[in-house]
Length: 208
Image 1 (cartoon, helix red, strand yellow):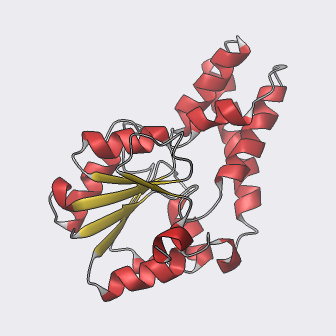
Image 2 (image 1 turned 180 degrees about the vertical axis):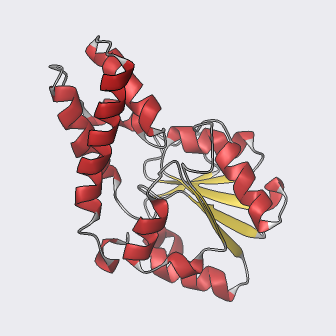
């Protein structure tokens, strides 16, 4: 394989917990309690689509102005948690894996729905490892649409079939497979059963 494409949340860093807390607060405003099970459906999904799902689950509709206000407030709440992050928040094994990938001259890209990907990578001190970054500012279609990974491959100058994608969400794995790429699941095999292989984390990959 010539290139590795990484999702961000739940793969490189556990910002998923920050999203969960922030979305939970939004849901509670409408008397809806977001569960960890339902939250799985929000992983890898854009902010707009995630908010629409929560409103649908809560059985409420809001004006366009209110919708924008909720999305903005959720992001501000999420960023308040992100602002406190540092290198210690990188998930186990990730930095070593990135270093080894660089040594093998395999190209590295980020393919994330997050619009905050660049500042997060900078806070973690690992942005220099990435040859290309594709985030929520660069795409119009959310996973499971493969757009984010297809653009990443184009930016790296490689064919889709020469890419391996590391993902923690069902939507992300589906996007990778649709793009014709190999998908490595990071997390639970029960959830990520469509992936080519599943590992609990990068420490498990390094120790295989």
